[in-house]
Image 1 (cartoon, rainbow, N blue to C red):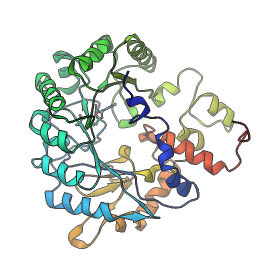
Image 2 (cartoon, helix red, strand yellow; image 1 turned 45 degrees about the vertical axis):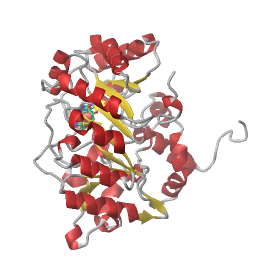
Image 3 (spheres, rainbow, N blue to C red; image 1 turned 120 degrees about the vertical axis):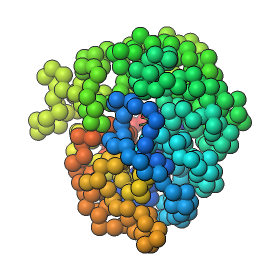
Image 4 (cartoon, helix red, strand yellow; image 1 turned 180 degrees about the vertical axis):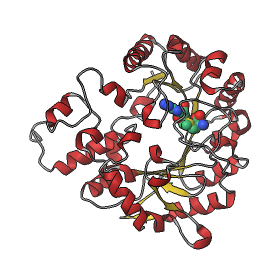
Length: 378
Ligand SMILES: C[S@@+](CC[C@H](N)C(=O)[O-])C[C@H]1O[C@@H](n2cnc3c(N)ncnc32)[C@H](O)[C@@H]1O
């Protein structure tokens, strides 16, 4: 059995950031652990439920990217520094014409993760094998037809060839290589095939999950009860698997599902009702204090405080402009961020929330609560 679940995916990983979380609980500020940088704002696939709210023809210049990673390397807030960079969003990062050089520049300063639709993997396999710490390939449909259904593209075989090329090029454990599958009611019968595909390709893990809909501004392709059934079937497919590879099932439950029957997200004023409903911490407390642990720099240089708010202008902290001397620290410490962060703190952005930081918010809230119940007993 793979040890990935105890290392890279260890659920206790947030403990490594406990110092930052204590500062946030005390009302202070920190530098993000991870910054997502969008090399481009466009994509060559057409996933109808894409989490990116907008695509446009913006390419981050190589010069800006170089200045940005230099800037991030020296940025320091309350003694904390950036540790990792993720190239995933805004569109398809590997479409950047100089993707290999961007990767190298980022990896010279930080650990780098890449999330890709795999369409350019053959081209960049060597660069990724040399510089990435992880690569996650979003396949979503494990057959040519289902892949075309979700991605609207005809490059399934090229994606698989790219995964094979990367697998063959990597040295040792890294980059960790995984396949992700957002699966809905139309493709649920292929869940076991998705796992088999991961096994055949020799990747480290497969992630199966139902897609987000309303939270990312997309029309649902299934009802809340179908989503619940899909999650159960995904869990079943994962438990049927007896091989070495790690199979993860996303435990995401959308807000529309929380509204099932008499369960409601509307605050009743009775905290116990909210707790019984097992709502994400951001709903229970109406607070999100952990967001500074992550930030996003979009292809146009705009800085955002959450991956779910990327490219939504009303949530921008401001734009980096090295020519005008506006660096990451100026934006991070600026008045615009303070105003937006205050709204994020009180979850005015909850309608966009896929709860990426719930685990971190749970820890911040526990620290903030001050009194520990039964902490005298192990
Ligand atoms: C928006 S994509 C951007 C990166 C790259 N273009 C790709 O396809 O991986 C980032 C990740 O979000 C996933 N994704 C997109 N829309 C989603 C949704 N509605 N629900 C869950 N995951 C989604 C994709 O499968 C991919 O793993």
